[in-house]
Length: 200
Image (tube, rainbow, N blue to C red):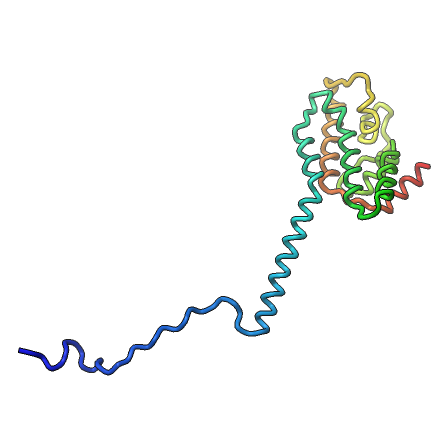
């Protein structure tokens, strides 16, 4: 016995299957969207490059903060190096912030190294609004441990009394101010020239 027609629904005999569409491209199809896509791509590349440059430029900050983090306030050698760390960071910042000739960069470096005492503390304060080193406006007794006094005298004091609670508190305060300055300073060349003018 043979069947004239195949098994199944006879109504589907003459149906032609539709072909599947081609894969949809994720690339924009119109000129306007292509231009927007290219513009966004350029913007992302530019922002990434700027972030990388900022990261590279702030390497000296990371190194200074890393040294400060491992610095022990119970070790006399580390304590004596706190003012030097701050000065070195300021010098490195001045070199990085200036895109000028070698002689001009050398001049600004020399101006920073010549700042001492109140003019140095005032200059530090002008570069960072979050830190306070200067003693201006504060009436404190001569034996008071101010940030300005500690910056000037720490490297030269013959004997550091680490058992003095007032000295330890002042040292912790100086440590915190140095960390703030390293992290948030923004060098202003006009402030540098003004501070040097006041000193001379």
